[in-house]
Structure formats: structure tokens, C-alpha cells
Image (cartoon, rainbow, N blue to C red; front, side, top):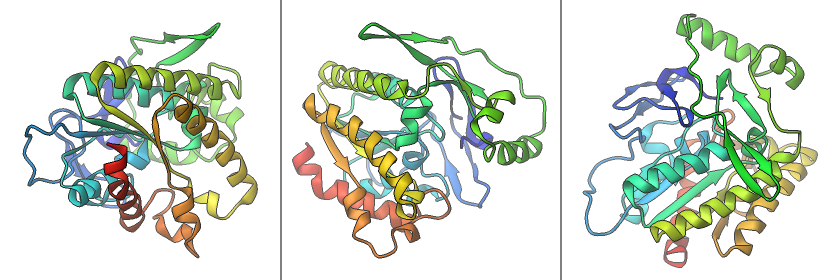
Length: 296
């Protein structure tokens, strides 16, 4: 879910974090966003000769439900001693993740781009509206993608924030057809086509790496329901596997967090509600830090 409190309209992406924002989420967790629209990863590291690591992704990368210092990008910065830029945005689809990666890589010229995703981000590429907000989307034109819906139309939100928050909480639990009726999620591409779109988007990540001479890493993360529902887990693993297999076939690096969490007797305990806790994010950061020499 993409909460309003720290987001603003963006013509190219639909929405993005508010620049120079300081506030707190619904659970009281502190959120600090810098002038470049990146979530704070902590101080102590100055920009030097070594290029930074850019993290992009959805709410799992942004760090929904935890404070600035508990996100996995912030913890990776502390563990590695490398500057990490947290470009994650809650609620993004895989298409928005790739578009934001392209934008931020052009600005910051990182040494590495880590693109985090969950399987639902692939489904989100099928939509032209998510969480009640219009977004860019891709159409398949033979074996090519055509970017559509940009500039994204700006929708004026007249209801007060507290009322929008309550409506979001009600709408998020509705079946997909009703979400479509109420304009919360609006489908553009046929169900299942997001998988083909995502495979083509990985090719854009490959070109991003070549263009900016940086290493691109695909990071697979998982919804907590994976650890309690075998049927749900099987589908999530199938979709995630398609993305990771395509990335590997193109020579991109991949990190799949499934095996690390699967060995825990209570993997679901590493989540707050639907997102990783500080302890869960520490596990992801440790996994990445251990593999950084190999990934680099």
C-alpha cells in the first residue's frame, strides 16, 4: 500500500517521496526523505571516490513499518561501509521500479543498482492505476515495450488525509473486481501479461547497467503469507523464479532471500504486519553484505 503521508505527484512515475520530508508513519515509525527524494540511510559517510550503491524497489526496499535506521538499505550501509541510496517507493509496480532506477542512475551514477521486488510487483505492471493513483504502464508491441500513460495525469485530492487513509484501509481488502469499480486498482493489461512485461523490463535493467557501467542485482523478497500458506507460496515462487531466471540468463546478478528465511522455524516472526521488521531487514542486509565482494 502507498500511504499519502510522505508522497507527492510525479508526472513520470505517478508519485514519489516528498523531497526534504520529515515525519512519521501510521505506527509512529520515523521517515526522513532528503532533497533528492531518497530515504535517509544515516550519516557518517561522505561522498568520495567510490561510487554509491543505489537501492530501488517497493515498500520492502523503502522500509514500510520501520524507522529510517531499520530499513535494509540503511543497515547495508552500516555493515558494508559503502554509501547506500534508498530509492525505494511504497506501492510501486515492477515497471515503476525500473523507471525510477533509470532516473536515479542517471543522476547519481552508482557503482551498483540493487532492484528489490516481490511477486505482486509483477502483477502491478498490469495496472494503469494503483492505490487510487494513476501510473505509467507498458504496452506490448510484438517483442517490444511501449511506455504509455505519461505524463501521468494529476488527480486533485480534496478529501482530508485522515478520511483518505480510512478509505484506503477499506478498499485494500476488497476483491479485485470491486477495487476496479471504485477506481482503486484499474487494470490495463490482461491478467498474467505482467510476467511477460517484467521479463522485457529486465532487459531495460541490463541496458541501464551497460549505459552507466554499474552492476545490476535483482533482489527477491517475500510477503509474510508465503511462510504460512503453501498454495500462495508456490505461486509467489513461480512468478519470482521467472524474473530471476531471466535476469540470470542475461548475466545479471540475483539474490533470492527465500532460502535464508525458510530455514527459520518462525519466518513470519521477522515481519511487523505485512513488511519486514528491523530484525528481518537486518537479515536481508547481512545476506547482501556477505555477497557484496562477489556481486561487485
